[in-house]
Image (cartoon, rainbow, N blue to C red; front, side, top):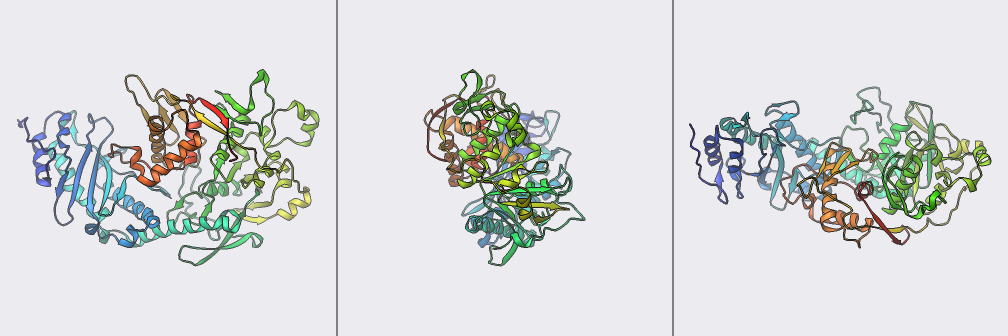
Length: 584
């Protein structure tokens, strides 16, 4: 029988041998005894690659969410190139590559299915800043999860020794030591980030809202996969009339299709690539991994994909640009609904996006409310304007363009938008052609709707208590479930419409940001714009760790303030006080 008493290790500098000795003593004890692994100074591992292991949180039992651990290693030990570590742009790509390598090494450790023994926040096709890899002036740290071995609820100390003292140093060697990494892959990731940033920075200078480089390969493997199609992919070739030349990060020129600011309409037959193109543009706010096919597809960083959302919560939004007088004396300038229709939800999404300084709207008619998008000539004759409270988007799209807010939309079943479009692109077998001239021969160009500046927005100020994170006896219960769901106390928040979220780590970060807003910023004085901007600045200045002060949380990733605002706006508990504001 093992001794039930072990020497305390808190606040002492312990070695890997001390860790092994402690785990030996813990063998056979109840699972909670793993808490004795806590040690603020960490466990120091020696040659050939010295590092410190910190146990930040121990899971309550074998079936609880896994324990959270952290490895810290001196930059000099890793051998990672200083010029990549010190460049803020390249460092994002470098960290992505490290996370990939560590994840691959951890896959070899063992475990089964969805219960791996070791796990890091595995990146996908988009390159994001993540909390799982952090770099300071002195060291590199990785934050990861571990399922500490047990039989039932009894500690398997010897297996824990294998996991932490034998397997983990191998992970460090494979995933953090430069000479063992794929240097070409790391360099390519850094280049992808740098090129995407460089191309995106040139858009507004060239009067563009988006850009697709020649040679891009947009189709995906399946409708449910973000991986590129393996074969028979048609490479993008720009029509001459829309071709522009931009420069990559190293100054090399590159040609492709420039989507000009204003109103662009995408047309074409079914299954010919309209939605594929819009999907690529939707994710053009991110850099992509080499080989994705969309590495050089970029759009304005503020772009928002808009869709109808039957049943969503709308709180205190000024819908007067789209909605006129309503029954029962409800004010469209302070619209509230627990069950918004498709048209009102889409109108709210646009107003909320403009509130957050969005400069590009992306709309697919397949996910839009028809009665919000168009109202044709016959319907206007049948139902007079004074009997229809909805002003369709087609009557406002030119006004938005005149105010610097561009729109790219798919229109496959109606010719209405051809007349208000600056550019019309036809997709045929995934290839674009400029059909603007022909479209304007068929439909007379129109400046339909007002062209005066978009009306000033209102300050939307959340009341204190608008976020209630209490659940049962827990005063703060905020968590994400998958990519599209957040639970805030008793409130279930559906983020299905936020199609520009690409990784569960972003959703987890948004959940923590809502908790941060509740605790620090929602005071009855700050408006939604100020709250979201304050969090964005805080994250930029202090890192994602500001959202998870326990610092043992290994799995949050960057998000935009527009997604944070969209999450806050969809909370069913949100209560808004409106005040006159300034133009968005």
